[in-house]
Image (cartoon, rainbow, N blue to C red; front, side, top):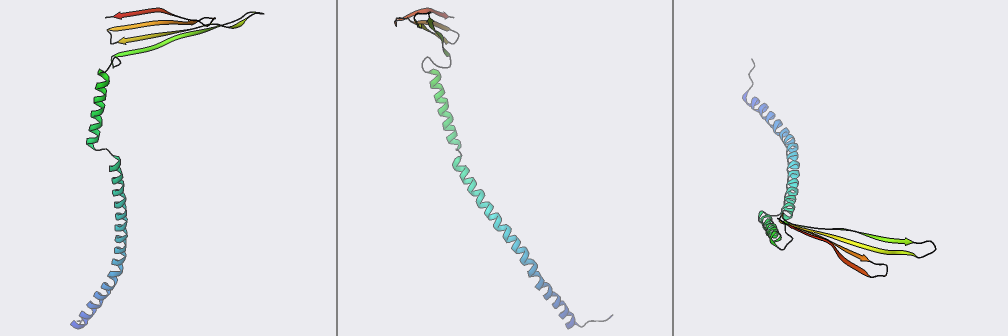
Length: 157
C-alpha cells in the first residue's frame, strides 16, 4: 500500500474541507431564505389574528355585562308580573261583528238604511273570574244612534 505523506494528506483533507465549506453557505443560504420568508408570513398571520381578536373583544360582552342584562330582564319580568291587572294571569279579548243595510226600491228611494256594530269583550283572571259582554251600537236611517247592552255575564269560581 502506498503511503501518503502527512503534508499531502493534510492538504487534500483541507481542500475537501474548503470545498465543503464553500458549498455549505449556498445550501444554507437558500434554506435560510426559505425560513425567513416563512417567519415573515407567520408574523403577518399573527398580526391579523391579533387584530381579529381585538375586534372580537370589542364586539363581545363581558360576563359582568351579560349578568347585568340578565338581572335587568328578571327585574322587568317581576314588575310586569306583579303590576296592574294585565299580568301573566289575565287574558283580554275583543271581538265583534257589524253589518250595513242597503235598500233600493224600483222607481223609489235607495240608500243605506241601517248600520250596526256589536263589540264583544272577554276578560279572564286565572280560572277564578270570567267576564263577557256584548254592546249593540246601531245607526238609524235618520242618523240617530242607539246603544244597548245585548248581554253581560260574570262567572266566578
